[in-house]
Amino acid sequence: MNRRHFLAASAAGLLARPALAQDSRARVLRFVPQANLSSFDPIWTTAHIARNHGYLVYDTLYAIDRKFAVHPQMAAGHVVEDDGRRWIITLRDNLRFHDGAPVRARDAVASIRRWAQRVAYGQKLLSLTEELSALDDRRLQFRLKQPFPLLPAALALAGQPPFIMPERVAQTDAFRQITETTGSGPYRFMPEEYVSGDRAVYARHDGYVPRPDTSADFLAGSKRAVFDRIEWRIIADSGTAAAALQAGEVDWFEQPDADLSLFLARSRGIRVEVLDPAGSNGFLRLNHLQAPFDDKRVRQAVLLAARQEDFLISNYGTDPAFWQAGTGVFTPGTPMASDAGLDWVKGGQLDRAKALLREAGRASAPARVLGATDIPAIAAVAPVAADLLQRAGFEVDFAQSDWGTLLQRRTSREPLEKGGWSAFISGFTAYDFADPATHPLLRGNGLDGYLGWPTVPALEALRERWFAAPDEAGRRGIAAEIQRLALEEVIYVPTGTGRPRTALRAELQDRVPGFPLFWNLRRG
Image 1: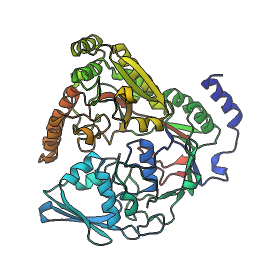
Image 2 (image 1 turned 180 degrees about the vertical axis):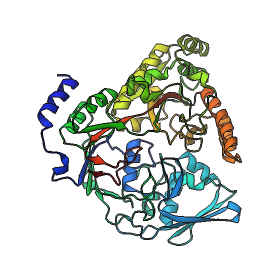
Image 3 (image 1 turned 135 degrees about the vertical axis):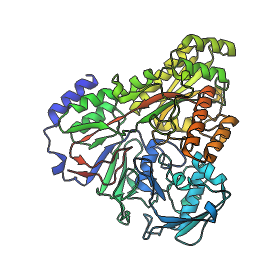
Image 4 (image 1 turned 180 degrees about the horizontal axis):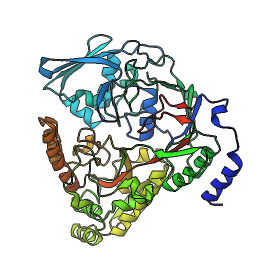
């Protein structure tokens, strides 16, 4: 029995069950996430599953709304002195961690310091900071070497923010995973109920005090935990997850593939909608440390041969309303996006690619592509990446595993013969790729940068110029130079911008657009 027949049979027998609005567990939200929660540390890893976990368990000093505007979140506000070189941030009243301890300025200081070692925006902020300290329990200060008006924006970074943790936890080495999950966010993680590969459970934090002055707007504003519990049901097989949604056994399936989305859209009691109108950006990251992709000509060969449409169709389906090809390194429609250097991403130039490989002496070179089987999006696009490299002439080892194993494996800097890797594919949200400050892949700082570790001093210099630009027009011009250089050096291979769909029970209302947000969500 194939997946489509299985779903149809399941629907026929199970949809007659009572609606969830009458379920005795109506104050429990049952959610199928995109992957297994294999790491509890949203600073150690950039995996979206850990980020979503982070937004449940922790809170942030600042946050952005859906228009990228920055607002105080845990911060009551700030004052700026000494011609922009001293910032004093005051915490809101009554902030408490899940263990009942008050949130202090020293907790925020330790959390920011740990985050800043792993995240590009934080690294920039720390490089401009002479002193970061707690003045008292409610006030922390930045003493800067020079004015940096983007400081609140750095602390509001959407994709990998400085989640505020207790000082004892935040003092963990930034390159070692934390094991304690005490936060101060709207929900508490329940470690005694966690079973890797099966479920993760969150309970409402009754001590959480939402912002009183604003309604929720994406990541900013008043976060209200309406449900008593949120249960993440880890279901690796998409067909099984879809059948569970139809049967009323779960309420929300985060990211079904395109085929299942079309099927579920025709199911009674299910609504399918775009998960995030701003979209998501895919990428193929090549390992700059190891052969064959330590040679720029070899990386250029991959970029010339790649067709963004192939990746997008495999994940989002054939309807171009749900994707956009021909994109550069910045999210289309954002202020820094441009057409600079886009000749590199026309794609399908296989003859040019093979000629470059012969010139580099790397024809038929071995390459190991990492793929994940338990995330529908990655499972769909990773074979496209493996096929691309094979058609270009590489001897491809397609190493598939679960996502948690891939996350561990991609941290290796060893050569292939010692278990290393050549390429992996993933994606980030529109908010992550909006500008050079937030973009995790647009670094040329070698081993201090994102996985793949490119060393491109000229890119780092352009990024510094972008931060120092006096106005938006100046930043846009420098961003165009950054894109041109990033594509020429093949910092990574852009695989297009898509609009992932999500499927949920029709009884669920008031979901805020963006990656899965659980606060303020309720049943109709």
